[in-house]
Length: 545
Image (cartoon, rainbow, N blue to C red):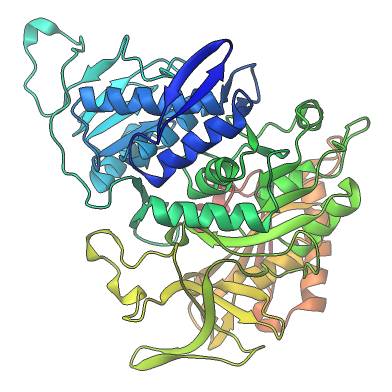
């Protein structure tokens, strides 16, 4: 099947080409979208049109073949420039390669460890290769990745080759050596963050990714007139599927930022006529209240929240200030992103992550020697999922106990389904605090604390206790007037928060200590790293007797 696409007076003959479903989708979007932008850079005039994306796929297909990177081989992408990342991400996958997204800003040791887990044949990066890297590494300056696959100026750092001392530190250009092809062709391989345990390696093929992207685009009613905004890291599944692939499926445009910038953001969103925002609770919390003169785009339909629990108080403050609905969702890498979502129109239940979208979900009791059994609505249990986008195994056969013979995956989350099928998450099994036999889930305590308008962030963790085993301890970030002494403000806010906890929580769930810190340690998606909070960094501490 062939067709002609006319752009700027020139005629280009295109065809589905690489033989993958994503390649066919890119070809279709070139026909229907033409020179309309697929992705735009929020901080410059840079953009990539749908026709430009098609040409990029053709160019990168040729370039990767010339480099000896065959279909099914893994291509690492470590690009901080969002347009560079988006171009290579879609192009390499459409060319039948497996993309391994990497954090370009990560320390050398972390990049080395990630590469050992995902085993790329080659890495395309806008940063130097870490010392001792065990794969080939192609370095290009940020913002200069070839948009159409031209290989001008590629510097290939050979791995595993004895260097000639006479060459000094220079790089050399040569074909990439053969790698190990994946049987499934195009797709993704990701290493999870490991914030709650050992990092897991997860492989998703393009059928799973496109299934999830279609469900997201359909549920959020994305169309060709939509213009999304994404400042979330592109090396995470959320931005890749919810942002890039769902926009491609819908034929809509996506404005990409390198990171979240609060200053001037509302003006930028208005100028770019943004219709929806892909966000996390930490971003939503900082976007409201509005400062004087900040314009909310008349085009804005909704803000999507994911990656971490959204406290009801934060959602209410945002909606009251901005006048735009917040749609809370729930997902994980193992499901190619989205699992459940609240509706755009219809009942959005505060505190719920919504109903399943394109994925089967059940809440079960049992475990260990007892087979899992679905519980009645309103009963707490472990959340399990299965479906077209859900993995059937972890890479290398690890964590086999998480996936049953019938395909149900144990998410590690505890939740409740109500009579209407809405899921309310209670917390993670890994986070539960056993206080003398009483189970305390941090999320419940954190939602009470975040009800205070001057608390901008919190983390409740379990600390060892000589009699009770574990007890809850709260860490807080506080906002307020810049003119007020920080310690005095912390003391005032903690007194009020402690009173809220006394009124709303049973004694077992009340924190035994409150530590106010300047900033909580968070990952790239805004999720608090509980194992990194440190009482020694506290500005103010209250011990409860």
